[in-house]
Amino acid sequence: MKIVTSFDDDVLKQYESRGSSAFFTIFFEEAGNAYPSASWMDFGGVIVGWWIMATIQLLNGESPQNFYFMDGPFCLKMELASDREKVTCSNDKEAICWTISLVDLVAELKRAANTVIRHLSQMNVDEKGRNSLQSGLTMLAGLK
Image (cartoon, rainbow, N blue to C red):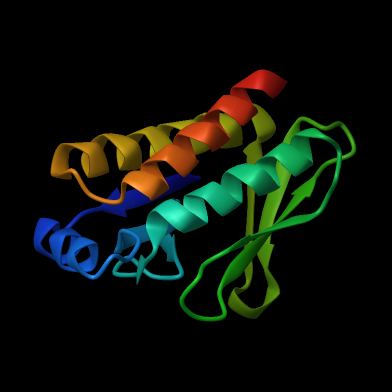
């Protein structure tokens, strides 16, 4: 499972000029399937931060957790297996049932968060969002 991000710099500048959080393409991809869709745009920095916090809860044994998207009624339920090594990602409405190792989920979240931080830094936008993501990464690193 991969978290895919893509940035339209004009859109980022437009949202920054309004004082809004960064808005960009973000979705999950597994075996060529995209959720919610390959063109989904959302407040990506905010939701990656939510997903990091939910993953911290999973690492603490609090399962299941929901990975929500802000725009729309979309989310993936993340359930930790009894061996605490695998996570089942599901959405009954969309007939999604993916499995990822907990280690790979953490690595993918770190990769996605660092990609977002790096691009927003290059564009000099959403400083608050970048700082929040960095704080979440620091908390996540403290658990592993």
